[in-house]
Length: 57
Image 1 (tube, rainbow, N blue to C red):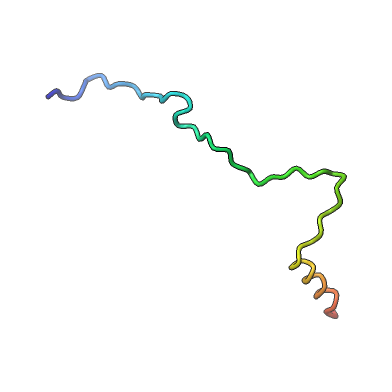
Image 2: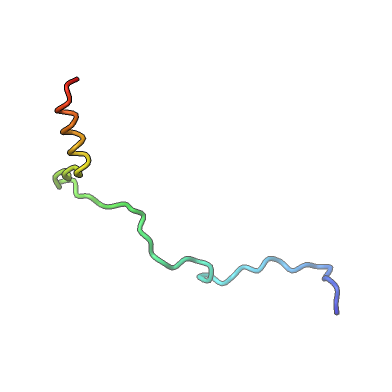
């Protein structure tokens, strides 16, 4: 059995691609055409706007 070396070896860098994540993932960003009309608000937003209009302030 041998003891520890007096000259430690340097850090080993793995081969390129071994530790890289190769799966594609979306960032959640979407490209929207500037000429397209604004999207219709969802149901909850439409209901909130309707309630706001009907409530006297």
